[in-house]
Length: 141
Image (cartoon, rainbow, N blue to C red; front, side, top):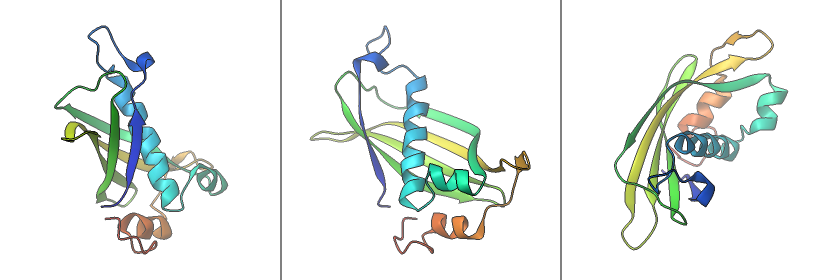
């Protein structure tokens, strides 16, 4: 797996307990997903041109440690599953440092959505190839 997205924890993301407020993890994962898909050649402008979106269908988060102000982390994105009209990404959020620490794992299923038809659609074969690494030569999966 070779895709990682950097995050720098901002003071505005901190809650009263002094750690990152829960909802920011999903925001980070959305940013990481878009950067990952852009890396595969499926960025937001291509989605718009092809009238497709990857919409969140289901999300689960498991927290194992906290992130605090000024921490730096990397979100490692892995393709977990590819279905007919959906795919699942696992986002592992690792705190950087001398001893990297897994702080959370977010597993999110996305449905492939046709914006013109207003309904889910089968994954485009080229997009499927990109997710499996067959179309990119990256061997990301």
